[in-house]
Length: 393
Image (cartoon, rainbow, N blue to C red; front, side, top):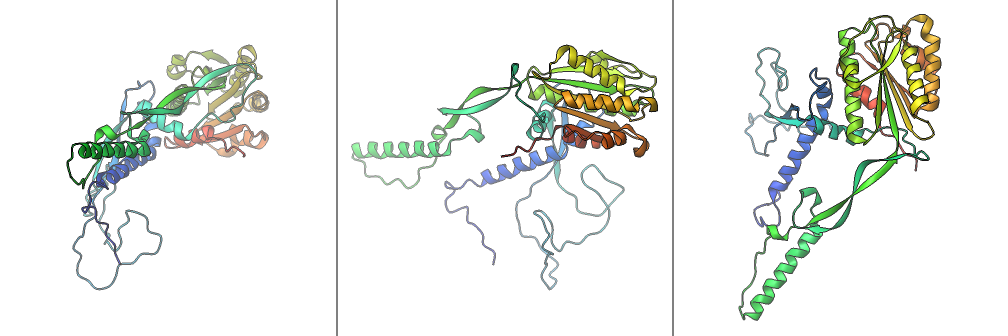
């Protein structure tokens, strides 16, 4: 038996639009998170300003309503695996895909959707919800201030909805009601108060105090293969990967130092602009880039005082005589770094690439590897490298 809740009897006690707004916010946030991979793999993302906007399709919301059927007998039933939003007993036929993915003419009913815009900074805010630098230890001496935490400290009349102090708001309304009753009594006015709705002046919001959160020093070293085997597609994927990594780290952690290393058969430390835009050619000695990272650590970053992270990207097509040196360099980096991450771009044959050899030789827990075979794999590789640690209680 269907039960319908009556919202019209006392509109003051229940604002139906609140539920609609909540569902709308959930829908928008889900669509943004579902499209993060597509945004991060956009060809125009490298070098964009924080005000760059990306359009994201949002599926429309419809109110519940009765619709006419075909007056056929029987009852539409499901299998028990249905999810919210599924249609039971609807006929399927014709062609047609989702929004913006049409493949020829079709005769299916269309789906309502619209587009919302999100800035690059907002994209990284959503990334920060699920990712962080793993294995972040507290070192003895050097500390930096990272993301701020918030502590409730009193109330105020203006604020954002998530900080609405519901209990204090109700108490303010009750105080106003009692004041009105006292005023009527003193004026000898005999009046019953049937309705006493909330007004804007009743609203109270938590006042928050920003408290800086102290965290250990961190240094990140990016090592990119720029040899001749890294064609334009591979270099684009590598640069996109490093660009998102660098922007995420700078957005989430203050004063984290980042060093950039480019290598072919030889390696050198370069500036950020040169790292993301300059091309190169030549053979491939992956160990040259990793040994350069070790030199930078020895010269500038004492492992006892710094949290160290090294991320290396290559197509895995290494000169065979350099394989043993590369394996040794990775082992050395795992000894001094909180995390060493190796990502392979468009490997030709998995069994002959450097990733296959490293996975067989490196057993350190702070070694991670990933592959990027197409643009959509960028987001998967990033989550592999920056997944939050599961803290043991």
